[in-house]
Image (cartoon, rainbow, N blue to C red; front, side):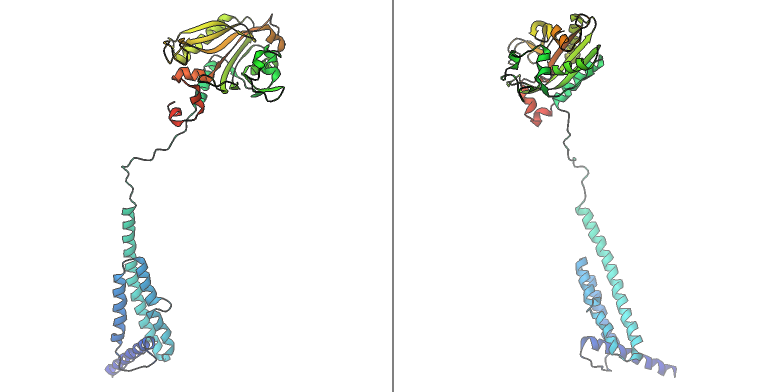
Length: 373
């Protein structure tokens, strides 16, 4: 009796799957002679073969769509369940689920294998050779003019001078008149000065800062005034815009000897103790007496060149004792106070310090030139 029941169950099992297969692949025609294994194995063997043959994730995904996509082979078996008798549906559903699980297991294994292979290939193709030289990024640096101005300012700060600044567009009074250059003075000529209006100029020196400081402060005064200045001049040693550092020291009993000692100390600190320095008598309307300060030409070592014009010496600045007319303009008693002033071009100092023979190089912005310093 038990054997008969087992035989009947097997016949039912085969019959259900045979009907599902025919629903998917043929018009509805439930033949009782189809063998279940003959219908199941072709689908199983087919998807296992196609999954194994997939050489990429895209190809593998196409196999997935073919079998378990919305209109896939296994999905169509699910749809066919609705046409089976209710008593046959559980067995058919179980077998379809088993087929789907086998496909998913095969698919997941292959997908994992392909992902590992693609990752390995990507790591090899994108491998970085750490032995290759790295990229050199350009590094900015301080301009040689700012560097030189900083060195000058640092020296005078070390001996007690404070830094003072003022406007570059200056009133005629501070730039000329208060410095003993009244109307009609040659320095006021338009060939030498850039006029903004009848009463305003681009400052021709930083001496106006000295005037403003003496009007605002009481002695003792010890300042330097660095900044840009403007003059109508252009050649290998002159530029229409350049930089100056001027100094002023006002107190009681200040002498010419202190002025000379200060500037000699500056030159030797910046250029070396063996650099010769000389003072020549000169004239400036705002100092009395006045001198030019020269040092031995560092470009030709005194032998003569186009920068020093064959003289072997280069002027680095002017200086002198503050004139009585300037004391009057700032309402200081020159019988009680005395002082000295000096001024120098930053470009000229840089040319001498670094052996540069053309002032125009500072402003042409050639990186090959600027990167040397």
